[in-house]
Image (cartoon, rainbow, N blue to C red; front, side, top):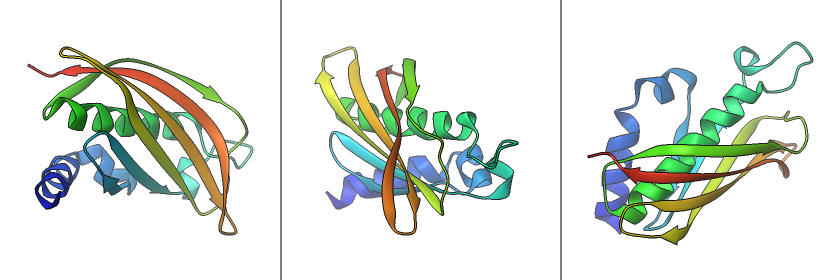
Length: 135
């Protein structure tokens, strides 16, 4: 499991955009991944809620990590869908993705995104996507 964690962290740390916005890979398993993103003013829209694009990024990356780890390596997301359930606000976002359908050429993953406010997780979005090998 240590090798998997090291592999996942190496991949994550090589993503300039993830570093730029302050995202962190907080957990990685053989079929799942968890990412967190601090909520800063730069990620908010005009009403003070987290912009949907920031939530979408987190879902996209968590799904790709979960699917890529299930495939055993280098992967890309080929499509995903997201449903926003409620506006996100608080201190940070947490995305938890799991591989649900693992095949030889693709993995279907589901992801739940939570906004953490005053220590309480509130489900703000659900996403599903398909991950394929990068090569």
